[in-house]
Image 1 (tube, rainbow, N blue to C red):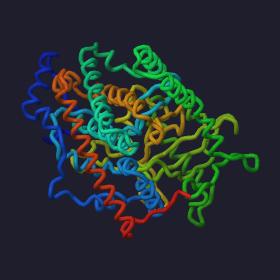
Image 2 (image 1 turned 90 degrees about the vertical axis):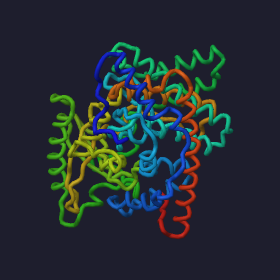
Image 3 (image 1 turned 45 degrees about the horizontal axis):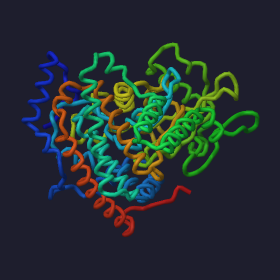
Image 4 (image 1 turned 60 degrees about the vertical axis):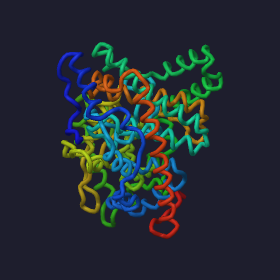
Length: 476
């Protein structure tokens, strides 16, 4: 069933909307989501990844390969295009929402709201597009299964974690369906609510004191990771001014990339024009950006799946050198979902990302906007722009215990449900899933089977590196 390029329309009474969910079960039974078997005509996964890299910076692509080769989990993070291809072959209810498009567990985390509250939410929307809500949930659940294998959790633990993801999603969607409309729209998860919940779990003997201390440590660390800390790490004082530190190939100043014959003044003038244009996409006219001036810019390597796409950090100055602002401009291309769903209705893919993020997040960065810019090669490219760091925190997959993963699974499942409940028909989705564990078990079975597929694809990827089909290069 191919959804339209729009979240599902919300029509009728509460009872009518419940009936939509029940009717969807007839077309696509909940148990039909279980399992995964690749079709005989499945495209070569290496060819899919190579095709995705055609528009990326060539000298950075080997770094992407090296990061994806670290483990089956890092490979999974970089293989959103493969899973999009596979999800298109799976059943869906026909009910659409605004998808994250890459809802793996490392794309959730802590950040500051405009009101300076620390909240937990989805934090990556490069692939966002309207589509079947099941796709996000399947990718999220599979990511926990892949991570659990990487961390050597037992089969029983992995199964329990997968069921927790889906059950938490289902129960939160049911709660949103029953809540007053504005309550569902304004619902968010504050960091303090996470620790309060952990204390309740501890009193019920479901969480240990060390889990609370670990969570409080992550939250405390997130509050220190603001723009000033990023400034100290990435910026240096030189000749009475400030500039971005060079750290090639991960951080390369614009001056080192500028073609011969182009003066620094030309770069500054061009960036000033672009920043003025970008300001028109921000959510308010009287924006603090107007009080900042451009200072410097550098190309930065980010993430796993995004390596090779153009990403820049932009250094701005307010009152003086002690009043800096660091923005990140990241290239936005067509979502990997667009090969299997209707194309985005936005001409600029940066706008697609921004509009999707604003719809799905409980609160978004006030500097979140978009722009189109011409590169030195004469190509016009789309970008979205946001503040580089603002109270940012995330889970450490490499040290996460099974008990912590169980709690994190609940938080991520509920968070995804909140995001989907804003754009889709939460009543119909809740009605489709029902109150039993039939759907939970089906998705958990899918996650296990798809993790097997990920292992197969990862082995093929490593073989392609070994035989020279793919080049790798260390970060340093």
